[in-house]
Length: 356
Image (cartoon, rainbow, N blue to C red; front, side, top):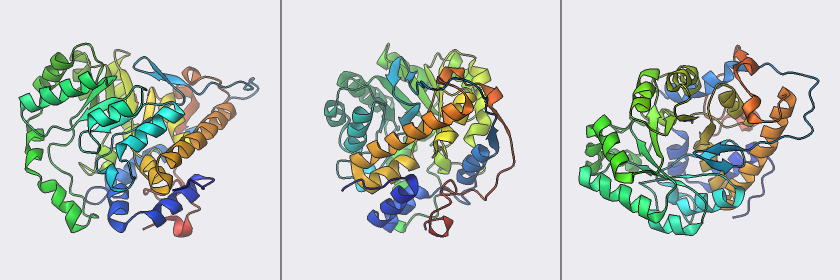
């Protein structure tokens, strides 16, 4: 599959042509009224930039670090289950793209191929994300496998005690929520966090699914290395806040004692720069990643990241900064949104404004 798109609008159209309705709905859909999905986008749109002028921006560095590893732009590949249904090599295609471009990808427990095969696919650092599908011994065995395979960090997802009510999905996808092993996720506690940390030793540890300052503070008390703000792209609990609205309070609660990353509705470079200005170390992309893969497999994802890099450099230059660490909250302010939010509302030139 050739990645022949020249911008994100063309990429999304190409993905829609290539993907089945089931896969399209799986990628684009969310829980119940899809209010959380829309709030993720609306919260980003309710922030405006405050650019500074008359600064030398002839040389711009778009790179940052995540858990001590340098990445080319502040964009990570969020973990995605079932990715093997729409790109030929599954999560290995994401891994290949992350290696080629120079970023870090999160590998989901519920994707293919195996964690060992993906670990051997490329030498760059990557994080293994645990969905709990068994008892404590099962968790420890899986974590040890990931450490042995050489993953640079381990991530525990904690927002999925119940499978979200994703009504856009077709009946065969709805059946996924009835997997008996999912019941083990209902038993995750802070004791589970401690158990995983004890199992992986000095390997950096990430908690994914934090949405409040209170839980962020507890994560710091448990000495996690990274707080991953996520509402699962609106696919779990409906009617929560948009993620970027929670970012300032969580950054304050963490108080520099752990890195903070975020996902949820981030599809344009400006979105990502807003998150960095409010204290995130990096932004993870899910749907945008999936559309890129649907448009052109691993080559499509590399091309998407290259376009993001150009957009990030341009946005930084127009804001008057040359490094990401120069950004702070003075560069953003509250503003009125200009369009109704949905999963494609950042791409107004799509036919009809939205692709069903």
